Structure formats: structure tokens, C-alpha cells
Amino acid sequence: MAGRRRLVTVAVVALAAVALAAVAIQSGLLYALDPPDPDGYERATVTVSDENGTRLATVEVRIADTRDKRYLGLSATEELPMGEGMLFVHGSEDRRSYVMRNMSFPLDIVYIGADREITTVHHAPVPDGEYERTYTGRAKWVLEVPRGWANETGVEPGDRVAIPPAARTPAD
Image (cartoon, rainbow, N blue to C red; front, top):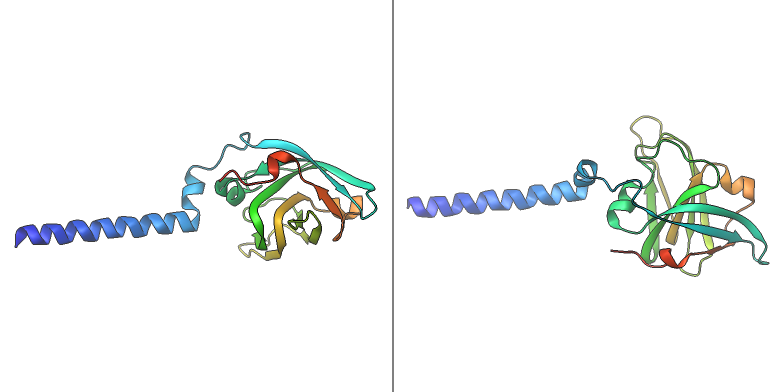
């Protein structure tokens, strides 16, 4: 009888540990405890051209090609100078939703389809309080740059983005 109780107790504790681990992973707690190194990102240059092939802009990007890097995004970044950004790499084109989690500066969020054509551009302000607005679009890649970059460069939906080889497929 005592052995059976001990076995049930061990099973309950193991199940609770698995459930707690799942909650920690889904909530992002693990990333908050051990975030990716902000200097551990591969870097590349992204070029945007209009439908005629005229170069509109270039931006130096950090490549977020793993789940951890995509989750953290630019949250650990103090500032983002004009001409710099982050390129999020996904395995396929799909409807994507991004939020401005723990951001201290506004962004332009540029959604890029699998055909490398810009599908959507959002101009996202710094979140007001705890409210996190969701920005959605169809994309295989998402480019985040300082707010105003798209307007300043004339970048808009329909323009094409040259994706560097290092950012064509996710690392995970």
C-alpha cells in the first residue's frame, strides 16, 4: 500500500513538473531567464527596390533565425539608428502576428512574402502601458526598422526585398 502511494506521488510530481515546464516554455519565461546574446546575431545587408528595380533603401540587419531570437526580437535593444534593423526568418509564408513587447522606441514592421515582395507595412508606436497591440500580415520574413524608415525611403507594399543567403531559411 505504501509503495503504491509512493508511486502515485512520484507520478503526480512528474506530471506537475512537465506541466510547469510547458507553461514556462509557452509563456516565454525561459527566454527571460536566458535570452539570446544580443551580439550573437549574424548580420547582413538587406536591399529594397521598387517594381522597376530602382534601389530605394538598404538596411544593416541582425538576423533572427531561431525561435529564441525571434521571440526576443529587439526587446533587449536600447535604440535603433536609422539604417539598422532586424530581419526575422520563418520557414514558410504564413499569417504572422508581431507585438511591441518591452519596446522603448517605435518601429516600422515590414512583412515580406515568400516571393520577396512586401505585403504590409505597419507604423508601430511605443506601447502605451501594458497594452500590446498586435500587428499582422502575410510573411516569410519580417523586417523591423526605426519608425519612419519606410516613409523616408519610399518603401511600400509591392516593393521587392533582396534577402541575403544567410537569411533564406531559419536555423531551427
